[in-house]
Image (cartoon, rainbow, N blue to C red; front, side, top):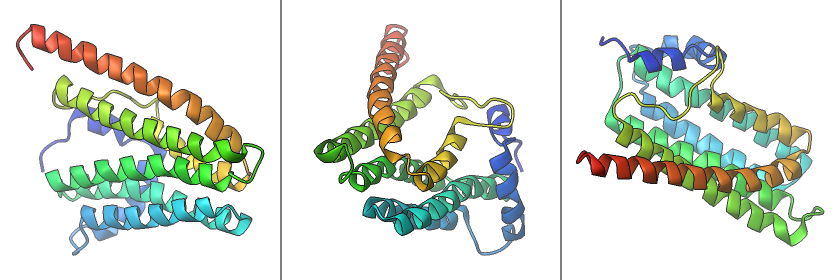
Length: 214
């Protein structure tokens, strides 16, 4: 097996990856492939978003549970690919689009869920704004990493945590009924981050064009 890049090694020393590894190791050598876990994650994550949008307390409970499973599967598919030497381009693409869809549409589900609260008619538009901004952010970040060369990462973890680990917090936010403040904060932050990412991509692209590399 080829040694993984240094960035991959650092990225996978998180508590979430270590926990996922416990369930992944028995799958090595079986018929289960990383894409199977990613597809399962996509289905469970979509169910979590639909349940979230329903807006009831019972649906919110199950939405949070399914979302935690979704986050763990996000770690598990990558761990199976690395440990089992099962990396593939199709797996990378499927994982990327799964990230885009689930991480973005969770906020749309949140907007639909709180539409009968004090946000009223503004809830769904805020959900759409956040969802669209998330999609744009993730797409631009991917473009930046492609332009920056192999192994380049826009974000990095701190000790045993990675920025993606924050997605686990969406489950307790759902259970505690904090969807409205989270949606408001996200609707403010994500467009700003998208603008910053787009500006960074433009500067990087311009610099590469000047050097004749793009």
